[in-house]
Image 1 (cartoon, rainbow, N blue to C red):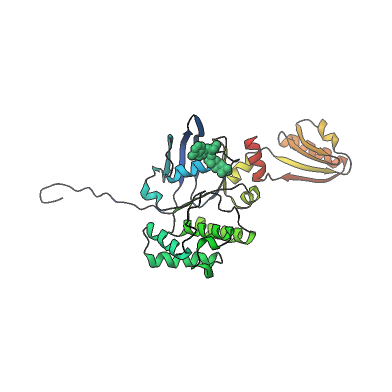
Image 2: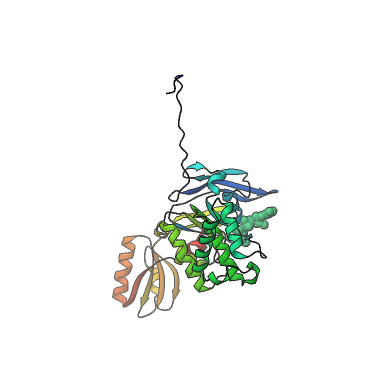
Length: 312
Ligand SMILES: Nc1ncnc2c1ncn2[C@@H]1O[C@H](COP(=O)(O)OP(=O)(O)OP(=O)(O)O)[C@@H](O)[C@H]1O
């Protein structure tokens, strides 16, 4: 209380920190008459590498631009830690835009130092961090070169470094792996894992389904601007009907006549089957054993399989 008796309410500002979730709710965007993102909702959980997939034109870049506030939404909300996001929080995000955005003619270290300053870093710290990241990508020797003198893949590495410079609390990366060679992919995966280990939510778009399968903790699938699938990989895989590969000594055509068994594929002595439940699976296994079974193995769907099913 003050002498006059007035009470001050202290409002504590809590800065954004890694360990919170990024969420979009009902995000919608039109261009002219066309709705290109239509009521899309999903969460990017802290510490999870979340793959964002969909065909060309599905709406991934438009969604990421709305998350970052470079494009206004016509409906819906972007939330950080459950609260509508503002420019202060967004400035703590690391963003790699589709159009990239570094200057080809400027020297790499100067440019990264300047970017760090734009994010509120001291120039010396920004430069030190830039050099550390360039070293990680094997570009330490090139720090004084102009960006345009690097190969496209190496320019891409610098673009990634630019997104990571200011100790971001969340990462939104539009096709960060495109154009990278396998060594650079591994370096980048290792780097991103360091951020997720600190609780940073990472959303990245990609068309490389094998990479998504190898990397992702969670998946978001868009098709024609609508959400088709979203969630942790374990849950998405578990939610799919169980399928088995059955290899017999003779022709596997008999599986077609098994009660409660859907034959997904049949090729000579090999059948991919989907039993309707545990009883049907047991009957199938017994019949297979009686007929001479070589293999009866549960199939683990790849994220590519889940993606294809989701968009079909
Ligand atoms: N500025 C714009 N003006 C008009 N239409 C646009 C604009 N930006 C995007 N679109 C349209 O919105 C749709 C979604 O585009 P977007 O770039 O978000 O897709 P994407 O999933 O990122 O595709 P890609 O994988 O090819 O990058 C497309 O049909 C695109 O043509």
